Length: 163
Image (tube, rainbow, N blue to C red; front, side, top):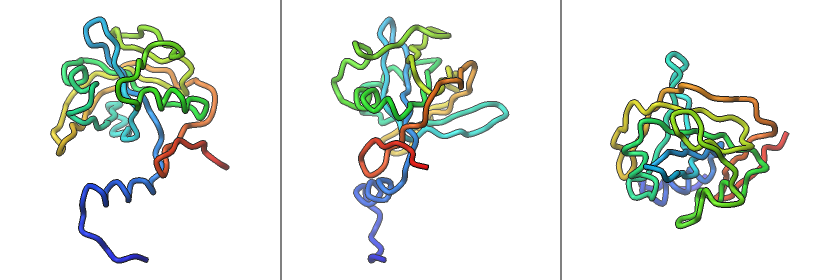
């Protein structure tokens, strides 16, 4: 084992590179324009009521939309969607242009096609957390029936789950 280091942003990043996380895309409608971003911070918070959380940086291009949105889409990506995850993670990308396939879903939320599962959730709180906001949202409708295995993020790369 190494020598313990004082907590810094770099230490936190280094520790969490070792943590395998599922990959999600969060979407929202901003006026008539869809916005979205890749998130590895998605968490199931409560079953009763059905509630999730995710983090978003206040400097993120999607933050103004999430700050004002009443509803968000939460999409669980499959291992076949590494390119989609990269597109929604890339700054300045045309995230909803071809080849991204999506449709307007419940509450006007952009819903991505071909994902493992999705939810439309009503935002109930945006909690300040450093340079981020922790968003709490209650699920209102969704579909868990997509085909495939989950996409993971580990050591700075998208990976497939191995048995």
